[in-house]
Image (tube, rainbow, N blue to C red; front, side, top):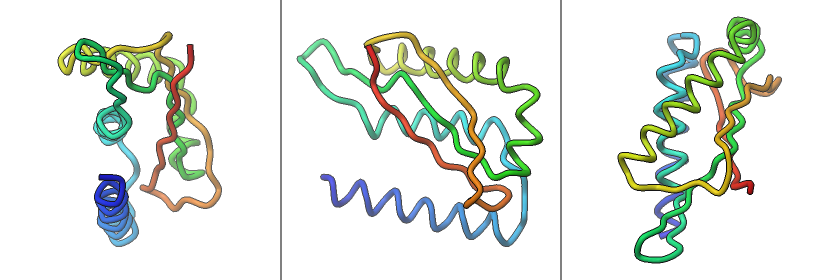
Length: 123
């Protein structure tokens, strides 16, 4: 399963990266929301029949231009994205080990329109 997941992630990155480079579009919050949902699905850990744990701490790495555009709204945007993750997790019957946090960070190695999500489970 790990090989298939890595292949899918690389394929998704290739497609998204190609479109972002060709069309030079800025990252939109709705794209980040979808990526956070996929991050939960891809990193879900089954603890028992009634409990599937997903990450609760997310770092969204953005290109410098995208970060500069979204940074003034980072607090409110982070709260709204965290609420969206909470709602999605409730629909999927996922649980968290602690409070949900979404942070924006600048990544100098990304071009406009590209982003990267890192997540972890924190108590």
